[in-house]
Image 1 (cartoon, one colour):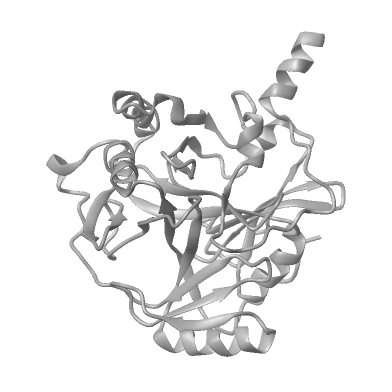
Image 2 (spheres, rainbow, N blue to C red; image 1 turned 180 degrees about the vertical axis):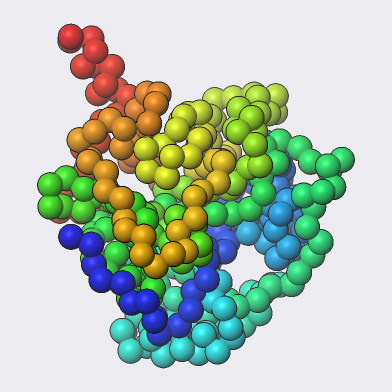
Length: 333
């Protein structure tokens, strides 16, 4: 069921790196991520906010830029290990017939903008400007005290086909959701913990969410309190709860433009080569949560489009156990 993984890929992606969002009001969105999420702002320039977590030294992991229309995800980013990996990546994408062009990006080294087979727009870079980490500057901490960007989840029409593409780039599977012999969702990684990229079925490509780690379990509850304190109480969409896959404690919020962000309490390690992927049954409620209620319907079907990228529908739309369906079943029992 799972595609092969190339353990010696053509170029070396090391981790999920950053997200660039287009938003209606940069100041409003900035307020949400600073005061609720607890990110810090490295720079505000030309109407664009560059944010990072308390443990992050590189210039940005989240960029908030003014939207030209509907708020979208402009692109996501991955780091490669060496600058020579960028040249190898350019050759790889050219050979595949996939878009790849050099672009200039503020506070990043040489950057390659590419599209994967789903159309998702991705920046590859090997360096950023470096700044002091703030995790010990406790007098500056606020909100959820977000430490660092960890992963993203992308909705795509064909998770299996895209899994094969990322397997060719060295992404390994930590856990997956299946129904019989059919792959439903795949949780893939490059760094030494269990997730950089989650691929789930749906109309896509769309950014379902991006996720930051927090230092303590209590921060997952604190972010809900801070959301209420700053007028974003209704933006808490799902949780707190505990996932089945990865087993982390989590909460999901929608920012002022509807972009979805998760805060969670870190992962287990996966660096050893002999580790086998963990299978989850799509029919089990624990696929959604280890404890707690299923997610509301919009959590499964609403996401952020990539700027200017056409959407593709899957052959069969997913039919997950939603909170609405679960409540309806309880009412009938």
